[in-house]
Image (cartoon, rainbow, N blue to C red; front, side, top):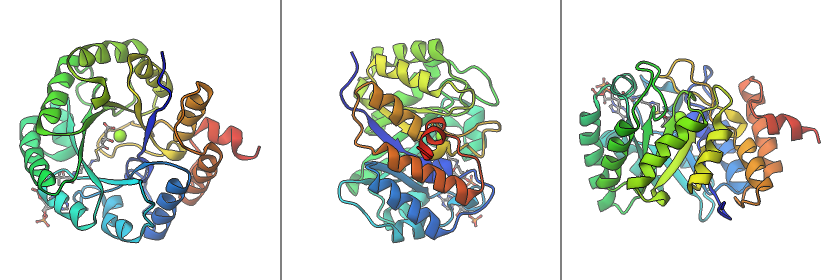
Length: 298
Ligand code: HMG
Ligand code: MG
């Protein structure tokens, strides 16, 4: 029993670009985001308000937000690790923000320079302010299927952090397979535990495709009843604090699969194929989407 509709959160302009060696011009980022909205994406993670010393690629997120052409109904979101980041995102008028925790303590330290309980304290302050501003907050949990520093991560640890974020008021938690080590049975086991205690419409899947398992894990997610998935046009991406993490699941590959399952997304696949090739060319990198490569010259 598959859903008739799935939501795609396009994370290319954030997760995709945060790890690129070359700094992309503001105009190129703005063109990318505008093209994505024209292709029918309804939620575009457009930047991060994090320390420019830690992630220089996202330093111009305020200017990106100031220059995009906002399409009615589209959610333009941003990552906010702390209150300072929230203030930046709020000034930029981000529609929603996202806090990002980890199920692994070592990854939390490397990524946001604090342990998990401290991160939850910081997110509490962000979410309190966001509530006052009527701004929805999404949560991420990283390393849900493995950690680059600790290896295996227990489903119970994922459940604890996910619950903490939902209890604070996140409208949804996106489960991050940060380094793409998840496989079908692991994904099934994790989601079995989560959905025994959490309502399914509060969960999303965020798969990186390091080992080519992302679509398989999405299929498991769909079978479990999840219907929100994060992906990145052209398969851009990787996390600067997760060595070996390759790009996100490519949006084109995701849309191709969903289209052929009769699951509607509102996304124009052919437009996405062109955007994926164009941004790959701008970055001077190979297109990481198999569907993109197959359909580009058709
Ligand atoms: P810190 O050094 O512990 O922060 O970093 P601090 O509070 O001690 O402040 C140090 C300096 O940073 C100060 O500036 C602050 O003003 C500044 P200084 O006085 O030295 O000039 N600062 C900030 N500047 C701009 N925006 C801010 C901000 N906060 C402090 N928000 C911090 C802590 C969290 C800031 C840092 O560790 C950081 O920015 N980390 C980057 C994390 C990141 O962006 N990671 C990638 C995204 S997460 C991801 O990719 C995973 C995901 O895709 C899901 C998955 O795949 O698993 C979401
Ligand atoms: Mg990610």
